[in-house]
Length: 155
Ligand SMILES: [Zn+2]
Image 1 (spheres, rainbow, N blue to C red):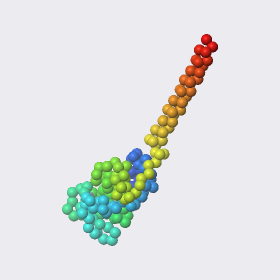
Image 2: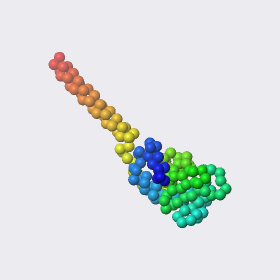
Image 3: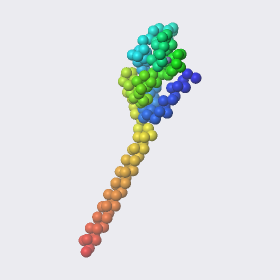
Image 4: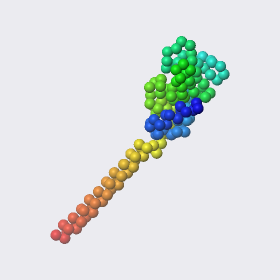
């Protein structure tokens, strides 16, 4: 199944914080031909397809194909392939999140970051717990103060 490759990055961890719909929008709207064209000289290779020399392996005849309509690229020489995000990750050595941010800027997509992402939610819960703890300590302190004050008053 050609779509298998695009599932991988969801497990990379960083992805959890960026809204999935926005990732899909970036994948759809990023100008893949332009992005890849910065690194590879692309020539027409039939309907809906362009090709060039693969940037991931050394070759003399172009076997690196890009299908802008499908938003995918594939090299028949070395077997590398993926979508526009994977190209940027591999080409620029960026982690998934940074590749998405870079492409979002190029595509004019505003990324939403999910507060529900695992690391952030834990952070918020932790803060809340600490806050409640602080409240409890303060209450006890004032209660003790009040008791102490009453005792001092009586004595
Ligand atoms: Zn290749």
